[in-house]
Length: 185
Ligand SMILES: [Zn+2]
Image (tube, rainbow, N blue to C red; front, side):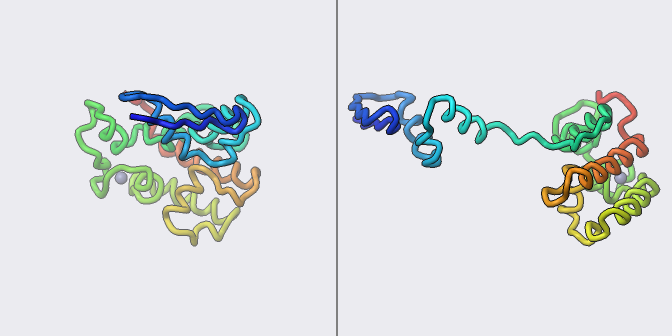
């Protein structure tokens, strides 16, 4: 197999003719060709590496300066799908969770069910909705997906202060539900 490898302009027209079979190079070339031209034209190796890392590292979810370590830990678990909720434990094969159904028996215990629908937490939810309505009334008009996402992550068009207030209300819901007041396993 003959390959012609053209390495970045910074390294000048290095045209290499290689006779390779079963090499990692074809994959590298394929991946190189997928890169954005701005990445390919990085001025230095460091800049190139940083650009690559930006594309493969997950964006850190903002916690908007909230100082509630336990609450943030629980929120992060909900965000990652690694919480006490039956759906999460069932999906990850926890032996003590033989079904993803909620104890209320109306639905699978997903994050959506837990925060927006589970009858076990109606009282906490009414408080959450009332408080959200006071600070961002239009948020209640959003579809369920956007509404839930905003409760979990905040919203990019909101400022830090508003997002912080929203997340604090979500944490209040989480704490007052006592759903996670037990060991995860
Ligand atoms: Zn339920």
